[in-house]
Image 1 (spheres, rainbow, N blue to C red):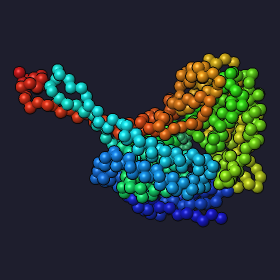
Image 2: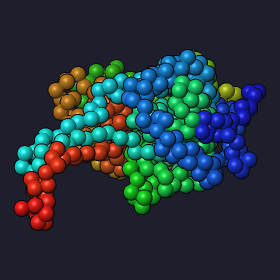
Image 3: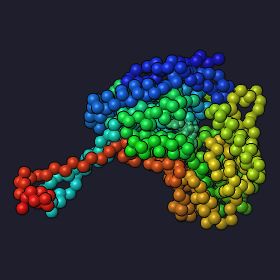
Image 4: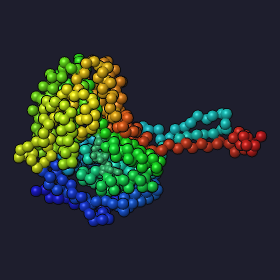
Length: 505
Ligand code: NAD
């Protein structure tokens, strides 16, 4: 029996009890044990956090630091994240169902990388640019400065709680903003831990606040708060659309990273071993609970059986089990609700006539019965009109669509409301790049999938969102640009702008 950890909100550099006194349970998806409790934050908690963020912003204690000073603090934070790697990885795995092998190898280092990357960018960015002196007006000097927006709101889902949060707070803080973050209700713990680490690393009180609570109340109120100027949101397209409407009313800046249904196109020259591994990795990483999962697999008709047979052979070699066991390749689905969604889509697929080549069931047996485990599932002979092929399932379900020629495959790949990611598997670099050019998605991988870098822009085309996270693009998204124009003359008689209304002749 795990001891239940009690957390408070992190506001103004301090652990702060929630206003209502109510709490939300956080569970381990492998056995449904309650492992932590966090406050059910309400509007008063959001008001306190936003007020603290605003006061810190306006005081200049963070925003007015030089970029070198901010970069130093963010690098210290990155080092401290790595010092706490074991604890953070354990808590992330415990509460999100992510395998401990992955949180140790990928998630915690990725948070440190996000901080280091923005710190490095601060030295590369043109914080100040100069305009040309235009001789036909007046002697003048124009310069353009990058400035923080003010108070930002960061709202994140439950699948990669730390990484997706870092992609918001790292660029927001780097540019001198303050931020209030709201994690998903089921995975709030590691963001609270990160808040303390950043504060201990020198990020001043109020610059980084975390309020836990339901999205429909606390999150909804946060994005409408009049003192919030920028919203960074990752989550479903449905909630993203709602947030875009709310943000439009307040003319707030918004970055939306939403859902996906990414295609994986296997070309007829692909290596079969590579293609089968790539197609598995594309839909089984974090048991398919990834926004850019490759879950529409387009294969030449003649290759479908061979590749699927290889995939099934490889699945049989995978260990599915408790996420805290370093031997587990795949862990549980993150919640009962998500498990139900997956099972519902699998039923729909069966009813619509897709054939199951492997899986399709909730896992049973002593080590699975108390948790939310679902078999890796492969549907074959799908077409792109089937519900489970068009809609995001967010689970370990691959839909194989056989194709007859490459133009058809590209047309099918692009026939989706989403446009987040996609991949191409080929031994011919030129053909692969040609396909990459044709895909209408924010990221295209060639002979790989899921490879996201802290310096590479990440975001969606179409209903997968707008704006880009990471690197230079994120820093632009968390800043305003100001033009300062200074006349270099005090001689009003030479001022052509005055002449147009007769002030000078
Ligand atoms: P969700 O949209 O239900 O919730 C995301 C966050 O928004 C949560 O913190 C939630 O509490 C909050 N929220 C919910 N309603 C809100 C409201 N009315 N106002 C403000 N905040 C609100 O998504 P989820 O179920 O947590 O995550 C899964 C979804 O996230 C999938 O659709 C997936 O594709 C998407 N996702 C996208 C990316 C990306 O980078 N594009 C990455 C990961 C996940």
